[in-house]
Image (cartoon, rainbow, N blue to C red; front, side, top):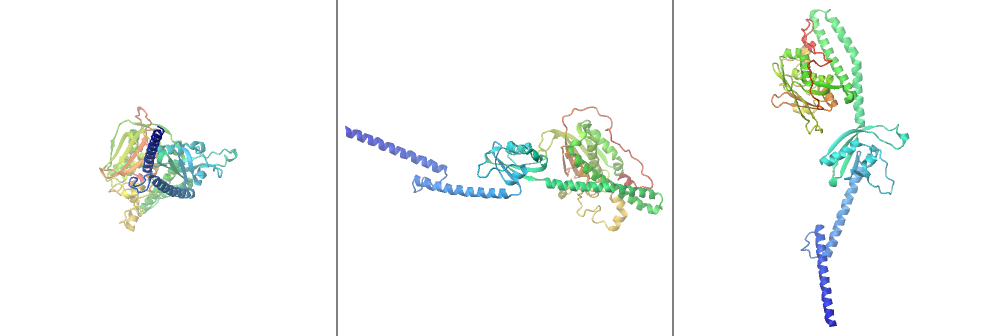
Length: 487
């Protein structure tokens, strides 16, 4: 009886041992498959040996990855741009020294691990936090410029700290992490401000001598022989053109300085403003027999700075008349709709203002630069076609800068390159967008402007806009060319 019990216990023990070994082998096989070991079933090695080889292989891979991470971190530490690594809860995991310098972060004590903390606890910049959220939600690269104001706990440092412009690029990473690259734009902003200040100072200095030259020329105009008056007319025309250029420089400097903080917004009926601008350009359009075609509602009130949008309309319509062939039509179209996603992130409903003509339009290589200051499409930067000789330039210079030629001229041929720059500055001050292209039907220049409407209700508006002087057509004087009057 004792022998039978012994044998029975031995069999049960052997069965349990075999069952445990089978389960262990299954677990090892499953673990090897999870570790992606090759040929688990057909390998001549045991499961334990395979596991040891796989673990050794994974350790080598981990060491290689750690070396790569160390290399990349060394590169980021020496990079001239800042880098921040944020986790899914917007906690700062790691940043390089340049980011600490840009954001005025205190480095962690040596030999002490740095615990992740919320970004807003370390950096009081809601623009940076918003950029991170945009990249995390959109899963795409996001960019933003903003003015950063450092905050120091030391009261003595408050008067020494200065704000500066930052540009951030947020990159979405796995597991809802986000990487942010930062660069300082302060030097670029300062250089641009110095350039604008220099141009403004020069323009101020040129106003007085140009006015004196024009007054002297107009005084001599009636005292010279008729054969010599043509030269005086040319002198007056060139002084007017230079005066307009100086005024454009001053306007650009004023818009840059005031930006959107000094806009005098009021409710304006946009179709009436278009009509007032066209009426002011009637002498120029009548000389070329160019007609206006308006497409849109009769009443559409928007919240804008009336004087500045009027300047935008004058520049656009003046360009369209200049570069349209005679007997053609300039079309102005007004509609409501959303801004294009590629150019404006706000879903706000606004007003689209389109102006296009039937001229030669823009060259494809010039489209990215048409809103730059002093840019002209002519490669030689001349105001006459390249096939014109010097003699023809001397004899026809009084007409080369006029606003009305006998045929359609290439766009920007006779411009100073400031008109569209002023348009862009005014539109951006209104937080709008401006686009330039060639119209698919007419082939002429096609300028599109989107302005926020702010959901205003229409109201009666029958009188011309306040503060706008509508100049009616006047017959030119006998001693001054009509081209100079229309300058």
